[in-house]
Length: 228
Image (cartoon, rainbow, N blue to C red; front, side):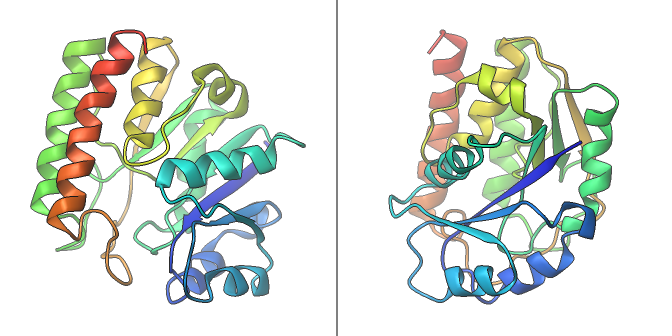
């Protein structure tokens, strides 16, 4: 499989070197770091490590992911994998994440619930939000899901079929909800270790961010269920 990696990044110059160094050699040829309006040396660090850098000044996790995908569209890969830039997920687990796709699945999610988590790697609000979203998707789509983990991989044709459009907090849940609605094959892979992030979170680290993310997740599930 031709695998490309998209890493949205906002002020991650401290963590990014470790992330890029841990990408397995067989996947290092197509690593795209999307600088989402950083005020530090995120872009320079990424280029220095050999990654392609795409600038997306409009803030939002989904906006950064969409910019990375637009960059890849000129030469689409077979599979796109998404990594966080804060080193919370381990890029060395990519082969395990990709295994279900090699076996025929369309989308693979690295589940923090099924795997192991370092103490403090997820806030209580994140744990609650994941459980609530999982329950709602079971009701809305009849799908069994444990996590909205950002460590994930998807086949390019499947991704095109989904028509992703969310530009901020709702990106991960939109992908899963649309995949379930379209009847795609979705697999969950336990992550061996989910680590405490390097630096502070832009979303879950603030009450406003956590509330905004939770509200958007609920809204997105409802919108997709209703055909939006």
